[in-house]
Length: 412
Image 1 (cartoon, helix red, strand yellow):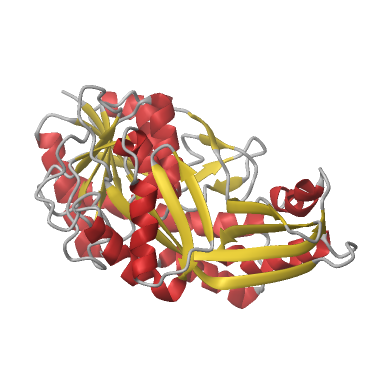
Image 2 (image 1 turned 90 degrees about the horizontal axis):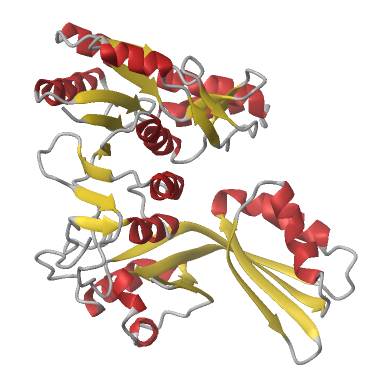
């Protein structure tokens, strides 16, 4: 018997009928003599509806109270799924994040998981009870309900799998696995049967919506294999695990992209050692992550800083950077929320030259201007105008030979 943690996202539990189908899936897993713990998200778009409800009451809800409100979404889906399982003869019990508890930091809306108590879960599982745990939520040391932010249910599932010493964490969703790019944009995209943690972390960080980067970071740290598969299908999906050194890696495994980017540029800054800190420090205090960044010195002895943030933080970011340079003579701030990021990812890039040249040649041939660049050992990312994104993804997917891929040989 193996121990599995299965996570079902909001689309998988979006209606009573879908919840019953998920219960049937879990029942089949139990019948195959697996020990199962389940993590679920809120039903469908209920989290968005709760946010909208809060903003109808007050434009800027208090973070503590917003977290308390949003956590109710998962309570609904856990209770309903536990009911559906019991109706099938599979004994189940729902658990909220604070009942376990899942201990988190005290940053509302973006809390980080610090510990997962499993005494109650292990006791339930020893009695043959399937625990159905609310994802996305936890509790801080003061007893306040917290939410984990984007990708929170994936992160909850991986953390629970680590704490329970599961053999695998299964993320079951509305896609068959991880593809070479979004198949809705490129019909020729293909399923990738195996990926390394490092590749998945880069794909997630560059915009792939299948998994959130925080969950992959957690899995990487604790070597917890993740399997992404379809809730309603029967395929093996994509297994994400440690890289196998004896396998020949593909040059490029996938093309990731992110439309939710905004660019800010500050010109006319003095050349000073602390200037970057002065501009960016307010973002750390506001818990706003900065992604791509470039620093240049102009011929007129001034400094220019250009960087990107998530588009939802664009208005606040403009206010912060304008305030940071308000006392600097000649400094000017420009912003653009109509940009997107595109990246090519693959561990084979470590041992092959020419990926950057092919990428930028392809973009040049279709007249796509590149505004910012960031790289790692296995990734090259470019910031481009949003209106050019779809064409760029299709052309790069073809240029790196991913369109006609029958299977991704040599992956981990």
